[in-house]
Every structure is written in C-alpha cells, then in structure tokens.
Length: 483
Figure 1: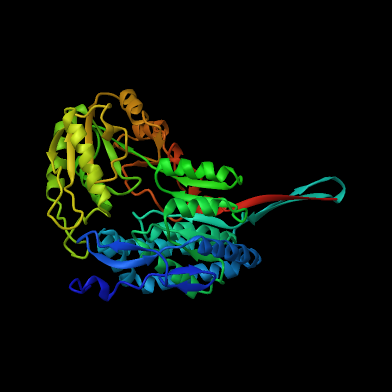
Figure 2 (figure 1 turned 30 degrees about the vertical axis):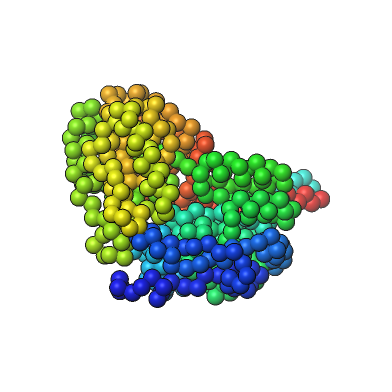
C-alpha cells in the first residue's frame, strides 16, 4: 500500500445514483468531505434537492415492481457478483474509506470483506424465504407466503462506512425490495463503492438509489411519501425516535439500531491478561466510535487496582496516527464534533471528582486525534456514565457481588451490547441470562456475524439486521385461504 499519494490521487469523484444514472454535482449544493487525519477537504459531495428525492421515490416505486418479480436465483446472482467485486477492489475501497472516516486501513479492509461475506450470506437467504401450507377439511387449504415489504428508505451512519450501507442494501435486495439509501455525508465514497458493485453485478435501474443531503430535509421528504413501506435506521436514539414519529404517519414498518452504552463486567476469576488485551483492542477499534464499544467497565474489587494499571499501561502504549500508516493501531476520530464532545464529557466528569489515569487530551494541531483515556473514581450522576461517549474512553468502577453489578449494568434504558468475562461456567450462564441487551459477549468482544442477528432492546431499538432475521424484517406475510 502506497501511503505517500495525495488524497485526491485515488479518491473518486463523488456522485448520486438515481434510476440507474450516476449524477455529478452540476448546479447542486455540495458538502465538503474532510480527511480526519489532516482536517483538509478532499472532495465536494453533491446534495439532493426535492426534485431529486421525488425522482428517487418514483424510481424506487418502479424498481420495486420489477424486482419483486425477480427469482431468488436472480437476487442471489446480483449479491454474489457484488461480493466478488468488493473483494477484487478491497484495497482501493479500504484506502478511500480510511481517507474519509479515519479508521486504520486494516479495519476498513476487514470491513470490505465482512460486507462481501454478508452479501454472500444474503444470496443464500434469498432462496430460503419459506412459507407453509395449512391443511383444511375436504381438500381446502390455507397458504402462508412471504412477500417483500416494498420500497425501503435506509439511513446509514459514518462509523462503518462500508458495512453499514452493505447491511442496509443486502437484506432488502435479497427480499425483493427496492431501496433509497442515504448514507452519512462524511463518508460517501465507501457507500458509492458498495452501490457500484451491486449495479455492475446486474441490479436493475430503480432498485437502488443513492442520495446525500441535509439529513432532516431528506428524511422528512421521503417518509412523507406513500410510496415507502419501511424505514431502516442506524444512529442515535434521539434521531431514531424522531424518525419513528415520522414513520407513524404512514404506518411504515421500522428497523431501528440505536445507541448503546455497553457495560463490561470483569469478574475476579477471568483469564486476566487475555481479558485486558481483548478489551483494549475492542476499546480502540475505530477510536471507540462503535455502537457496541465497551464503555462502562465494572471490575470486581479483588482485581480492580490490577486491572486499572494493566489497562492504563496498554492504552498509553497505543500508537496513534494516520490510518494509512501500517504501524498505527488507532486513527483519528471521524469529525471535529467528536473530540469536542469527548472534551466536554471529561471536563464535567473531572469536575465531579473523576480521575484521569491516562490520556484525556487531543493530539497535535492537525486532524481530529484524541488520546485513549481511562477514568477512575466514577459516579452514576456523571453525564459520561449516562450518555454514550462514542470515543476512546474507559470509565471504571469496582463492584463487590453478582447482584450489585447486574443492577448497575442494567441501570440505563439502553440495551444494545453487554460483555462479561469469567472462567466459571455457571456464572457465565447466569450473567448471560441477567443482562438486558440484544447482544451479549461472554469472554468475547465480536458482536457481528453474517448469520446472526445484530439487534438492540429497550431504547437501543428494535428489529434486527444480519442473519435470517435481517431478511425477515424486509418481508410481510400473506395468507391465502383456498376452498
């Protein structure tokens, strides 16, 4: 990988995609795309207007009428072909994703492969949308069939610029739906690469539209249309609740993957070194800008001081820099908002008695870098203990017994991910059952796989992506009673 090239020498011209046409800026408004490692502008992104959105809706309506009639084999061929194209272009896609989002090249390249794997899984699921026949007296029968829900509006955030668009597109395409995808404006080239792979693999015009714009303008306009039948959103709980209110006016089905604040429970019988290593890696992944990132660390009293020292030492040794540097372990934060938000949370926490053991400050005068940070002397009235930090911050508290830590872990209204580390099999079973989360990791920090649902409970959302559940969320049941 050549890390000496200027950003613009590989970064693509940014475009919209509506009704099979790639559309450049023209007279449209634009958004400046920045490199988080430098803060410099690397491209200008065209933004849609209302006429573009109306055209996207009309195209999605037309595309659905075509795609719902396609065979499972047709859908599988497109998804498999797209997966092959993603793998063939993995280095280029990953480099552009690092330029626009900041995470390391190793992380973005893995993200390409994960997306390709997901497309291949959905290619198989396209052939497994089973119904059933119910036997009735005297030769009558009732047939239960699954049909695509209809055109989908999908909104994807910037933190996984390749995988999030892949999730939003793979399931509805496998189910026979059309999609209007609005990814984050901060990381558009990644989403564009995913759409390009699908189009080149044979996806008909109108089945997938790619739009960028002012978020509230786009969501308000799209969700008011009677053409749509479903909304899929990944992002903050506040925005998710707003979209659910808009969706209610047209009784749209919703899939919501919303914010979390993942508790981590470290029991004194854990495999200590392995636990600390795994949690350090998980915490610095994408500079902590991960919805399932471990955030609230509850460590049993007997090993608390030892854990704090070990985690502090590991975080202090992390090499930080441009994600294109192969030796770097953590890149910058994705945009200027994130360091500012972390600074505010840390200032408030330390003002209320928290102690910073390592980190706690920005790095340099260029880009959006922030030191991995570990806090002690935390209390539940601190904002950082109640709001997801979405950054490389570890907040630690000691605990005494099982019941106490379960109460603390389940204290918040969020329930996306939770983690526990123990070598006691019975304790592992008990904590897995007790934690209120859509996904629980026991001695594990990887929460996503193509064949398993990615989902939250409580204020962390509803519905699932990935796995058979992801396709099921894009299908509706119809019962045909036949005499």
